[in-house]
Length: 125
Image (tube, rainbow, N blue to C red; front, top):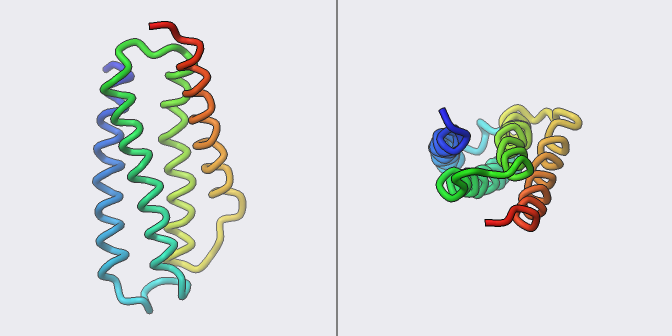
C-alpha cells in the first residue's frame, strides 16, 4: 500500500469520526458532558479533526511521490490529530485533563505544517 493510499484511507476515517463526534456534540444532553463547556470543546476538536482530515486527503491525492519531508509531515498529522483531538474529547466527556497530551498533539500538528511547507519549498516538481 502506498503512503498516498494510507493517507486517503486515514483521512476518510478521520472525517467520518469527526462527523460522528459532531453529531454527538449536537445531540447529547449537556449534563452528559464532564464540563459545562464540554459541547464547545468537542466542537473545537471536531473542527481541528476535519480540517486535518481534508489536508491529509489532499496530500494523499496530490503528492504522487512525496519528498521525505512531505512524507514525514503527512505521517505526523495522524498521531497529532489523535493526541490533540482525543485529549479534547476525553476532557469534554470526563472533565479530566490529560496533562501534556493535547499540547503534544498540537505541537505535532504545527510541526507537520512547518515540515510540509519546507518540503514544498525544497521539493522541485
